[in-house]
Image (cartoon, rainbow over all chains, first blue to last red; front, side, top):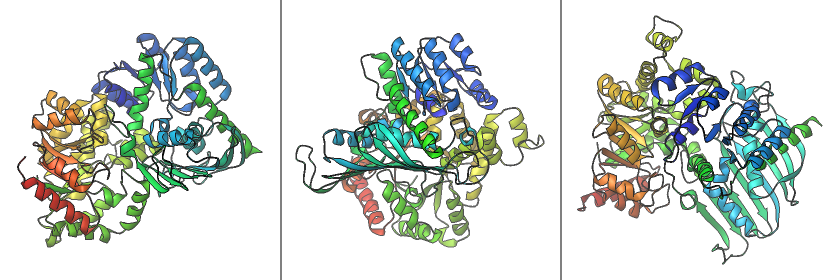
Length: 326
Length: 287
């Protein structure tokens, strides 16, 4: 159901949160007893019985396609959690359907709403580094740290595993900042503790604009307190290292137009982030929901993380799986 | 509450401005001795209240200071829960597994308080049991204020589950004989909600700094709320994750009429002493 999405929507001044749907009896009972929202355990019934303008889908990934399809069929604007769908063919049809119906569609790639990564995109778009010849995109965190237990995230074929859950963010970030992937090679999907899914993803990526680089993602790394995503870009004119909190820029020569000095320049999150009306766990989580709601209210606004762009990430996930099998 | 409170983020690698610095801090504070050493420096500088999460490591620190006469005047403000512990459990074990892990006793034993509460889906009682379990590590230590962490306060606030905020408030007051506090990134919204639920003059800790970092609703609304003195207020994130120079940062919060205490964390004697002196100096000046 997405507890934090629910809280962000519940606090949103322009949203009247009507109903929640989940399959966990204990979660539903909690909402029934302690919240004002209507509670459902069947999403179709929820959509039929409530008059909804928008829906946020945060179910296990294998259900995304049918749920998104049903919502679109009922002319509801959709925010769907990442990754978009398990089968790119489903994703393509859904992206087309949303577009043909003129419905706002967004996928929860929150890195697109982080001040630091937006700054990197701005600098790259202004050609700060000249020819970029290499990137390293990394995400590490402590999700699976021992050989037992597990929820749907550790099951094969349900959208579980580090590739769907963690690497999708990293791939989407590469697409957001640099461009779309053309080819993958040398893919290694490694199981560290999980029996049925991979805990780490390593691969070489080549983009449509011929920039190439590496993907390195591991969710069994407890030296990180929480998920930590970093991108390093090397260009002829310098280098950028960015994560959620800071952007470090090294330049061979100063860039007066962008106000950057020769040598190291550091920009912090505090200077790059706009405040939000309700903060829960990082500005980017509130910002992405704010953006979705703004797009629904003002149809002229271009969405920053559409089904179509998320579909490109799903495609790369398929390419990585195929490359590993080869 | 003391004017100056000492925080614990630096000990656990929580750094809002740099992931790299946070890693360096984790390495530095790997041993309990390193943490105690910094607490001793803070005490030398006249800071006697330590505000900290219910992290396992804090349990170990409590074991060391509990019977040590050197720390008999030392006060701890526990902040609960250590959210990552629960977030990781939720991902790994699911909702039911998390309840099983953190509610003391066997929840399937209907003779136990937790078992009865679980069977009846009595979440308020389950929450009380979890609060009691979190506080066990502080037994025998002076804990006059007990805080709910912002991630939980703000989650409940957004979900509109105000009755849990009230439950926490009442339980801490009656069972633990302490002042309940709420940490938040949404001060105006929380205050209005708590007042609406009948909690007058609550104790709140909020991000307050000159540049409006993590101040939801903006600086202007915060300043107005502070001036109204409707809560006992602790300012945190005063340095805005290092974006502000210490002098400018402390001068700003000390001059806000309506802030009772200031929370900061630091690792070196120089920084601790400098910050404490700045707060003392600006607090003496008329507002």
